[in-house]
Picture (tube, rainbow, N blue to C red):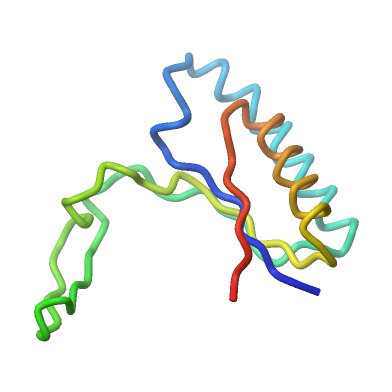
Length: 113
């Protein structure tokens, strides 16, 4: 079995009403339940959107610097992720597609090593 991460960039979500978001939660939870029932579930979570609780660690200068806040050079922010353990790429793509349909925005699927 191989582990994959299925995740989305917060900027891919788009602007929607609170009602729209509330309607997607049960759909996404149903897919996670389906992943669990299939025995492919490892972990899933949304990421806190409040960036005031973020920290960044950077050792590219040769000295570790840990600061409050996100890494400032990139506007991309992971909004949520699911880790699955499945037999092949096709199965990982299938779960990524189900999550994308349930959430209503794109998902990226990548192997985890």
